[in-house]
Length: 381
Image (cartoon, rainbow, N blue to C red):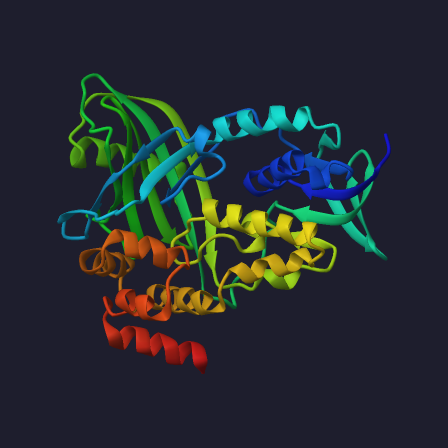
């Protein structure tokens, strides 16, 4: 096997497979050699991607379910019907994502795949040497999509950790056309925590708890909270658990771009693609990967693709993290103020970093001023 490649993709997760898919379909890359290295075969339903959007996008065909009606429940239990405009909330299952992309990659003669664990990366001149337990590979660029443990203690950082069940009920209980984006009516326990409910049919739904904290819950704790919420808050006495998902995502203002070099580019979670103030990542990953491909095609340094993430919004995220981590305002109160006073479609635009400064002010003015002013001065000085 010739071990010299133009592009080596370290990790076949969301970012790595998205990049590989674009390289498989774009004729610019047909004369390039591409290698994907991942220790897992990616053939199980190991995750769920949820995101909002207001137009057609390239993976439209594998959207498993979409909703154009959303509810938000604040910490006092008041339920709001959100104004979505032309937005929908969408779900893609991990298995559908893999099953869509992997057959395309297998048919691409310029793409190789190796199932192995990467143990070391070295830069040698203008070449990146990638060492697995079995072999060494060499490439001009290495796109690293797996996440290394990083010391985040000197930055505004927390972890969004979560567990969810896909449950089946005996009788029709859910409205499959309406989902609950956030339910903050549960005890907050000095954290920011909420449930969301995504109905898939009248008798089936994904019910998940998400918590922003630096102390990860145990599996038994998640199970206790989930079963209590399903039984007491949703009022479902009889249900079966068909699937479970468990995970954690860093929410931080850590400068991930500092790890990039002219040859090693970090993508996905390790590339700073998780939105620090919300934990959403899927559409940000898509935008970053598309920009990388554009850079490669037009001779720009792919490191520059991260310029799509505005420094203005990085500052907003930094202030948000400061406010909730220093308990200046409860996270539940921050989100409740936004959704009570601003149409959801404007909040989605704001979180997607697609608003002007004047529109930013519409969201910013929903909040209590003094705690955020304190956070601003804290971050400045």
